[in-house]
Every structure is written in structure tokens, then in C-alpha cells.
Image (tube, rainbow, N blue to C red):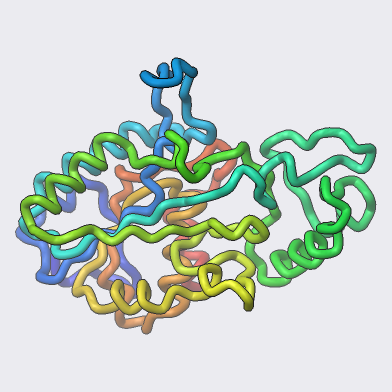
Amino acid sequence: MKGFPGKIGILYNRRSLLERDSMNPSTLVLIVDPQNDFCDLPAGTDSISGQLIFPSLPVPGAHADMRRLASWLDENADHIDDIVVTLDSHQYFDIAHPDCWRTGQGGEVAAFTAITAASVRSGQFRTADPALQAYALNYLEALEARGRYTHMVWPVHCQLGSWGHGIHHAVLGALERWQRQRQRAAMSVIKGTNPYTEHYSALQAEVPDPQDPSTQLNTPLLERIAAADQVVIAGEASSHCVAYTVRDLFAHLPAENLKRFVLLTDCMSITKIGRASCRERVYISVV
């Protein structure tokens, strides 16, 4: 996979990648949030509790993406030197979950509601806990000033310890086989545990908290990725966590590093509300 054209990593699907002669030495695979809650898995029954379990924020096509990714990992295990897996990790209470918010009249706020600083200032929305109102407004203003995105209220997802937080079974099996074969551990990166800021990117929160190192730029991860001769990226969703991870990588790495990046485009999909393509988002983040 030598000699990629262009100044940024070209987008490849899984098949075209496998058809190339060989993978470069020192290949790192970055798998972004391959978790049950993001996969359009069929509902099932928990064998212990008997409760119905189902993904809370499924990305259409993600189940098939993860199965393709698992096959790709198995087929290329000999050529993969390092694997990093990011895990979106939240508490039930979170600034991006519905129970943190109320309408101006005190009603519940539904998932997939966009909240802007202007809508809080006007009284359309407020925090359920009045003590958080000033912080939330400052947070929304900082988010918008950074040019990130409009704050979205998501369904409760990837709750620590839940089934939804777990890794898709096919990917988990492939990771186990790679570790057994290569006799080394994959690296896990936990992100999103601070309930007062969103954390799409694997590298940093959308609005870093100066008092919380877990929200600030993950320099060891950045250095680990920068050291690889080639970085292959897959995961969910291409419209959100993958896109913002790539954006931050491109923002913090030298331009000459960008040709090392490859996106497995058939091992990632777009959320229902993420209409910009992954290719568009990557180019926007570089320009």
C-alpha cells in the first residue's frame, strides 16, 4: 500500500485494500467505537435478567460493517502490528442525554433534539437542575465558538457496564484471535466519562475541561498513532466519532503524515441524522 496519491489518506473500501500487494510495516488499526449500542443488531433477551436488550443508537449498516471488519482483521492479522479500540463510555446522567434537559415549560426533552445557546437564552430549553444552567449555557457558547456542531440530545447510550457498551461480538472475537496470534494486547481508549462535555473524537472532548485530563488532548495516543507507518481506520459512525477523530488527527499531525491514513469505507456507516458523507467531512476537516 505504498505511494498513496494526494495529501491526505485516500479512502479505500475493504476489498480494494486487500487486493493490494502487501501492507506496510508498522501498521496500526484504529477502531472507533465498535459497540453494540451503535450497531443495528436485532433485539434479543438477556439470558440472566430476561430483559429485552437492543441497541439504543443504531447506525444503519453498522452490524454488517463490523462483520466485514472482523473478517478483514482475521485475514490481515499477520500484517497488523498494533490495534487501538476506542470505547464511548457514559453515565446515565450526561449533558447529551435527555434527563439533563427540560423544555422552558418543564416538559421532557426528546432524544434527537438540537439545543443551541440561543434557545437556552430565550427560555426554550433549560437544564433539569437549575444549578447547571449557567454552566450549560457557557458550554453551548464555547461549543459554538469552536465551530464544532449544534449540541444534540442523544438517547442514553454506551452506559458503562451495560450490554450496549460492549464491543460487537464479531469484532471482539477477531480482537481475541489477533491478540492470541500476535501475543500482544490491543489498546483500549475510554472516552466520554465526563458527563459535562461531549467526546466524539478519540483524541479530545469537544470542549475540554481544564480540570479533567481525560477531556484534554490525548498526547500518548496521538504519539502512538504518529509512530505508525500506516494507520487504518474503521468504526462508527463515519458522520460523527470517526469523522471528528480524523479531523483532530489531521489538525495535530504534520501534513506529511496524512498520506499514511486509510479509511475502510465499507467498515463504517453514517447515522440517520448525519447526512454529510465521510469523504466530505474528512476534506472539510483538512482544508
